[in-house]
Amino acid sequence: MTLRPLRDNLEIRDHELLKPYTTFKIGGPARHFALIKSPDDLSEAIEFAKAEREHILVLGGGSNVLISDGGFNGLVVHPVHQGITLVREDADTVTLRINAAESWDNVVEHAVAHGWWGIENLSHIPGQAGAALVQNIGAYGQQIGDVLECAEVMDLRTGEVRTLGIEDCQLAYRKSVFNTSARGRFFILGLTLKLSKLERPNLQYTDVRAYFDSREIGRPTQLDIRKAIVAIRDRKFPFPREEKGGNAGSFFKNLVLTQAEYDRLEANFRKNFSPNELARLREFRNRFQAGNGIKIPTAFLMEACGLKGCRAGRAEVNETQPLVLLNQGGATAADVMGLVKRIRQTIYERTGMVISIEPELIGFRPAEMEDHLALQ
Image 1 (cartoon, rainbow, N blue to C red):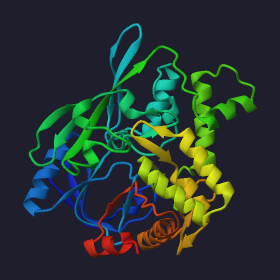
Image 2: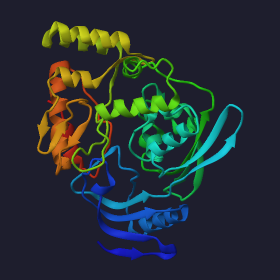
Image 3: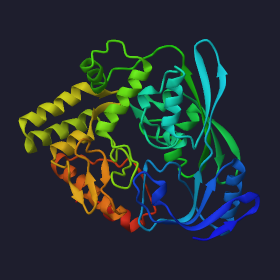
Image 4: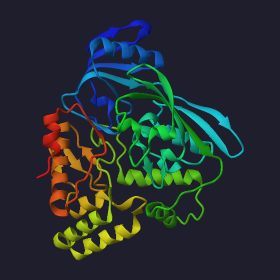
């Protein structure tokens, strides 16, 4: 690795291995790499990329990405400036400014410690606050879009700093402007959240209610809710700390179907699955009526297709939550994508459904992508 000191102490590293910067602990080297401590660092990095005619990749906590074994042939910028600032307060609400590199779970912990409501059900989700906005994270009845006021960003094409309101962010299910129409254009510097001082517990999910019922807790506190979410997520979603057990969270999106699409799915269940599995499908249909369609958990399809514990190389489907693909130590991106191909093909053959990948796939050549994602 070579260090290139530039003005204002920004260092550009050559051939920095990216896997330590991801929760999957997978990924090859970046052609160039820079730690971003300030907007000035970012401005300088943009000028470097222009001079080298390189694309820029923003890599935050690396919690929702899979980087190819070949790495990224460009400049990777990694934000490291953390911080939480109280900017406004009244009798009922507080407004916080969060630096994008702040750990998202630290943000939740900070809010709960002060009795500020609105994100406690988003506890124990890995990654940085900026990435939480990119993905519009949601869990157990809450999502970041419920409390977002605005985001401060730098346009990587022009170096201009802008404030994007919530409508500008174009938030939808696991989507935002940052991973759709403006993918790769903006570097998130910070986000502003408005939280409530009023007690607003959200206990609608079965797992959450069951946790408190089993402990005979009739009126859980906010801290109780955070502890419950942490315990539930630890049981289902291994929190990635080491290479063994590394993961990118949910690897596949849940299905949201039209009535016609659901009817085709049910027809395939009648043909290919047991009456018990068909009954479970109908139960999910009745339970998860989404505003824009019928929501069917992809984890259920994976389980019904016998994919729990399925392996390819050193990558494995998690037994307790099949949406999570695990690095069993030494897994490569090729291992993971081989497993993904098998999962998607099996589900397509047996249910007729095409499931979508949630993490961003980085550094894969077009021919690789076509091979990994093709269905027969």
